Image 1 (tube, helix red, strand yellow):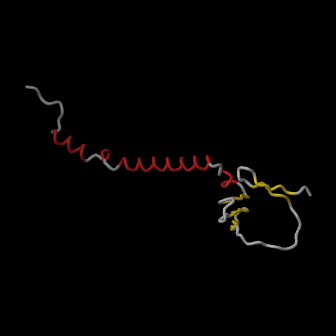
Image 2: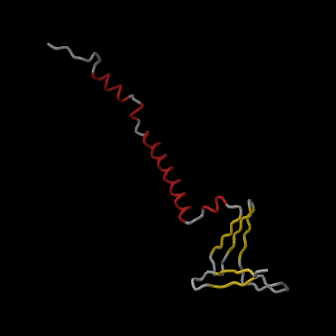
Image 3: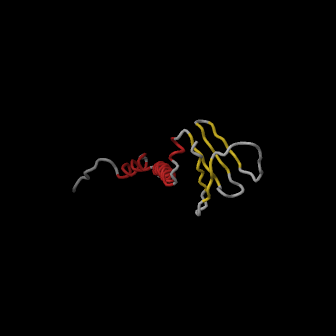
Length: 118
């Protein structure tokens, strides 16, 4: 009769597998969270570069025009750390001043300002 090659009983090997930390069913959740964070950062960087918003991260002076040509148009300007927010209104202003340039509306709807060459 042949002797078994392993000296431990079978139930001890099975118990060792059940008590192992490597078989934790929640161990993969941490890896999924890490992968989701990497995906979110990559998506954010792709959107910033697609919409050409990299200037917002590095430039000292930025001007953004929201809703151009509509009554609720807004202008947002950043000078270093300071933000300025202007809402365009239908109110007409009057007074004395000097001509600084000319504004043109293109067929595409864009408005181009051309300063005088003084």
